[in-house]
Length: 153
Image (cartoon, rainbow, N blue to C red; front, side, top):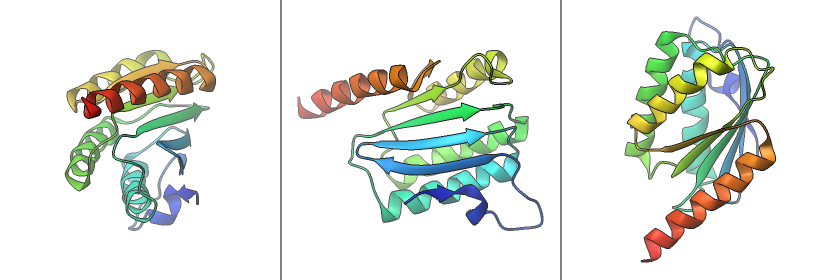
C-alpha cells in the first residue's frame, strides 16, 4: 500500500513537495517532487515509520528515491532529514544503501546531490546517484547482495 506524506502532516504548516512510498520486496521505493520544506521531511518520517511498522522489509533492505521536477531542499529540511535518519536507526536497522534517481532536468540536482551524499554517509549509509531507475535498481541489487553475504559470513 502506498503512503503519501500529506496524510501524515499535521500542524499549522503544509508540506511543500510530494513524496509517496511503498515496499517492493527488499526495497522501499519512494517517488518525490520538490522543492521540499521541513514539514515534508516530518511527513516523510511519519509515513516511513508507519510503513516500517505495518509492512516491514527484511532485515537487509535499501531505499530507492525517484525525483522529478525539483530536489531543492531547505537547510532546515536537511537538518530534519539528519534527525529522521537517527530516529530511523533507533527504530530498526536502517537501509544498507540509498539510491537517488534524478535526471539532468531535475532542478537543484548538481548542488543537492553532494549534500545528500554527505548526509547519508555521515549516517553510515551507502549512497548512489543515478540518471535512470534501471541503473539504480542494478546498483541496489549489488549492494543488497553484498550486505546479505556479509551478514551470512
